[in-house]
Length: 581
Image (cartoon, rainbow, N blue to C red):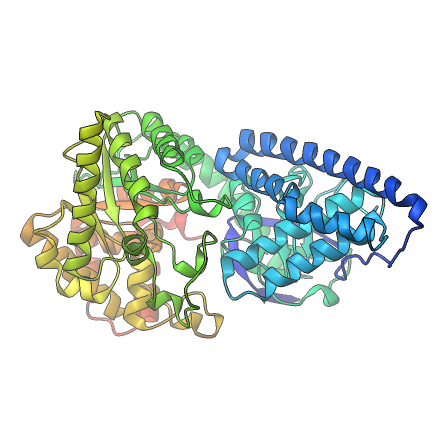
């Protein structure tokens, strides 16, 4: 048995035989055509472009219907690439002047484009190399230069293993037979990862080189929850995962029966249980699972799913869709929370050595008002449709918060003068994500209507750990006592100043840690839609007194490991059916 660790990008467990795609890719031999054949090569290229264009449009429509408009727009971006005048100019030069075959010209130009993108230190642009290679493969297929399509005509369950998968390959996976996939390269922000999550296919990427040790008939397990690929599992491990998969299926059925019940403790304390969403289409899942509202509406997809900056109308339509579907339930919209290293629009003034400590989130927005104003205008307009609040990320100083609020007020005045409907009393909140904010939280309480603790970044900045760095991943623990003390300090200030506070980081989606947070005084949690049933179940199984006893004990522990072991032990006593997951 071999167990490999990668990056989990789409949750779930899948077990099947391995389907290994060609690790070496494909190579098109150099081919020079006679001058008399140049016109024929141009005609073949035009036909291939037209066919691929139709296929991409079909992929856009089908993916939009399955996973939402924003995911489908990935293929709209590929269509723009396919019809780029610069691309066609270079292809025409190679075919017309250099007399290259259409296939050789396509392979040369697009492979060079992809190689240039992959060399960039900007992760956003590097991820776009997959889109370029996707277009290359589709054109070469239409030109007859690539004929092997192992993902077609499947008749048995498989786990796809490949160096990489393009977005169109991922969108075209037959979910009846493709139970999951793993790739050697890739990251959580790539289009392949976004499509996989939208289609709910268990996936792990960025494992590193592993294809040479795989045989086509091997049994493999994809653990999309923990980011693991298990090759040739022992009988014991295989049986364990089979039981786990079956238990998850039956547990989900049982938990669905309580989806519309309130998250109320056994002694009658109501906990507000909200959902974190990435895309508008996720609201259906939130409502089905009984979310009280949207506690965190991430807006980054608007910037990552297109080659161009989103317009005010793009923002408004995306927000309005969610607000209308939530039908009066609260929706908290967080403004842009990306680093400059992830933005693919415009030119960078300089390369950042440490993007996590650089120009990102609210800092980036305040430096790019042409980027920030359309989002704020859209939020204010959409807020007229329902119970909407706005939240600023990575606030570190009072000055940052005041500058953001001032800009929001100026935008509101512009809307008023133009006679555009908007909400004038929009509640304003801030993410509590850095120690500096915790230390000054009593001052921030005078400036905002609510707080939301982002445990992911709070742990990262408190422990000085880059959570995307595999070398120090073991040090990244949101249950570290130092992090817990900062969370408790934030809750205490919120109570003293009577400022509503919630926790929206991944910590709150863990049932055992949710018990701890409730014991520390949190009465509002926001979790991924898939975690709603489990967190609701554990809340309905305990009393506030039991949760407070847990928090009292945890505050005396000295390490994250001790905290997690104790919490797991208590979860086993209070909600044993959740532990087997």
